[in-house]
Structure formats: structure tokens, C-alpha cells
Amino acid sequence: MPNRIAPDNNDPDTHEIEIEVATRYLAEQSTPAENRFVFAYTITINNRGDEAVRLLHRHWRITDANNRVQEVRGEGVVGEQPLIAAGGSYRYTSGSLLETAVGTMEGSYEMISTSGRSFNAPIAVFSLAQPGALH
Image (tube, rainbow, N blue to C red):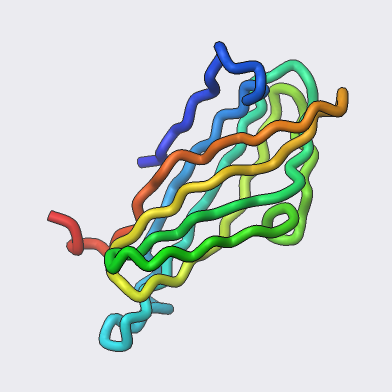
């Protein structure tokens, strides 16, 4: 089930961006005996606002079950800086490697509207978990 992060309609800085997250464990790429757990996540960014926005940068905070934290920052996502039309959406899939069977991710996208207003779209914490690892 996707994790939905609804826009805060009382906060003009979010520009009515809704972010949905779906995750899956990639058993064929994982080696649990070597503490290698690979996950894919699919992000859908819905622009509920009335003007187009461009995703400029990403920031991720990835935490494993040992409280080891990785910070990831970079331009765009999957090599793109997509322009998301008003009422439109953008979807991409990427991955994460953990040393534990469970972990979390959270972060934000730095975006700019066509009118030139910069803002951050927060991505609420979501779980990465090998099936059966959580009770």
C-alpha cells in the first residue's frame, strides 16, 4: 500500500504537492547472509497546484535498524529534473541498499514553480522491510 503525503493546504510553501511511495524488497539482488538487503521504491509526485513545478534537487535520509544513517543529496531524480504540469504527475523508481532487513527513508525535494518561487516538498518517513522481518 502506498504511503500518501498529502499537501498542507494551509502552507503556501508546499505548492500543493502530494507524494506517494510504494516499496518492495528485491530478493534476487539481496544477500542476507552478507548483510545486503536491496529495496526498490517508486515515487509518484502529484502536482495539485495551479502552476507547473520543476524538481531541482533531492535529499534523502536513510536509516537502517542499527541506526546507521546515510544522507544522499543530488540534482534531480534518476538523472532528470522533471517539469510537472499543474494537475500532472511524475513517477520514477529507484533503489536503496541497507545492511539490515529493515530501515526507513525520509527526505525532501527542492522545487521551483514556473513563477520562480522556490520551495521544499517534504517526503514523510516510510519503511523498507524484508517480508517477514517485521512482526
